[in-house]
Length: 220
Image (cartoon, rainbow, N blue to C red):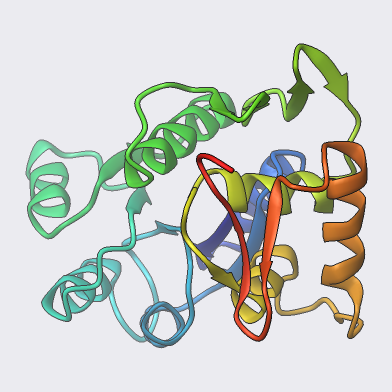
């Protein structure tokens, strides 16, 4: 899952990056509202963590502009504005959740998991498909009840595919999920990860649509 953090407090931003680094997310970070609106309008993100008191463009303006453009990316507002009217304004502007500072990192992680479940149409915390069970919280994967060891990139890739069954995901989309703005991507890296997942799970799990992308079907 690819997330965008929009936070102008450098120490807090670095703390959030550190807290979420082990959660299996690809996380990009911006520090002003105008850049955030451009990024969210032009690139695919699964969720945005949005501060309100931002330079160049207030977070509430960013949110309203996104919803005016009918952009449905889930947005978690993370802000020091803790008044009831502030929370109402944020939710009415189109936020999916509202968390005030200071906050506990465990609660932030739980809220992100819940938002991502809802955005993918799931209520259950575990993702189960064709004998594979993926637990986003523990980042554990089992096949027919047996644990399967995956690297972080393999887990991220499997999570992206299995959370959206029967949907074809393009190579560009998967590379954006696997690698942030500051990471270089080798030309065959995606294929290597796909190969490893097929070997560790089973070859028929991930289907290749040549010239289009990859998908996991609910039924073979």
